[in-house]
Image (cartoon, rainbow, N blue to C red; front, side, top):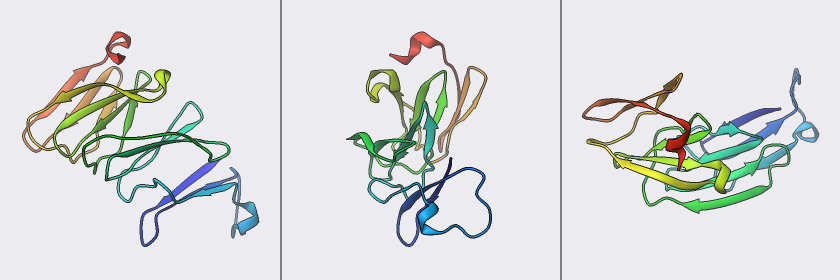
Length: 150
């Protein structure tokens, strides 16, 4: 499956069958979603779920195969950066400088949050067990272990 996200002028997420070539007819589209689709942050695919983080803090989990909504909740922050996954934990930097960790094994809820100095507009980078987070003030490096998920 291939997922395409478009933020402007109308927010839309489309799922297409893998291996499609040429012009794609509407009947070939597996599913579409417009609700909860972000303008800036990219979706992330994790365990057959698409995780969407909208700029206004609405976090939506969709079933990757059907497009049906699994869960939705709000984080009281705004978001410009895309989420990342490290050791099964979803990491989302908020514009406020708060780093949010979501544990997908417990219904996709915020399991931890860390206040960092500066604002967090940049997407994080993961390498091995290391997570690199850039704010307007500092570049942070965190080493994630499985017990830090909760």
